[in-house]
Length: 295
Image (cartoon, rainbow, N blue to C red; front, side, top):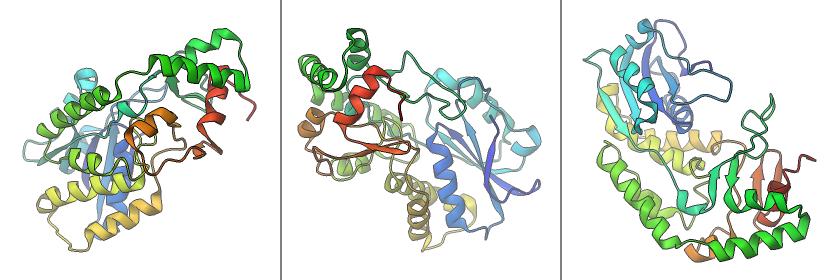
């Protein structure tokens, strides 16, 4: 998987190196667009994962030597090789800023890795990249349409976990990530997740969340970047709005989850983007259960 640099791509340009998950390119693009090329700086993204069938590509040593600021997303030990190789290649004098990731597992209590991915050139992670425990269990029942949806709603209601406990677990994770980062996000998430469609999947967020993270990173990194512009937050928010949210799909939210948490942006007939389609929860779930490809 090719590395991506936003802003100045010249081979001798000063670099900000960003490491982390799929939120990193959106953060980098927002910062680069707000920068507007005035600094002559490039924003190099190094992801901790790659699409199926691809390898993670690491920067060359000479590129890491150009790094003037290293932005590291707080990470688990799963991807320790990538992170440690980056740390080893960046000069000791290079300032480092750690920021947390956005995660909201509580919004999708039956979420799991999709056990039957059907990826191809157009759909590298499959047409249904988000797995669902109840939906997957129902695949063996040969149900279609309304019958599949009715069975899903009945079974998911029986197995619905304690949603407040799930939220409490995620709050604990947010607190831990914040405590180990220079930038904090828990306050923003808890103040806003009910009012805006912030989470599109458990780890993909809307443009407002990307902008908030970028603004908080910039506020902490301005000194190390050698610049502090009073209008940078407004430029970051405008850039993020122009880019839009993360990715081509939004995982539909279970009606009981939406009602339990009092999600004010949600409506029973709310349509969620699913690649080039817009489906309600009732449209989506029977298609997921049957792995419908007629779209």
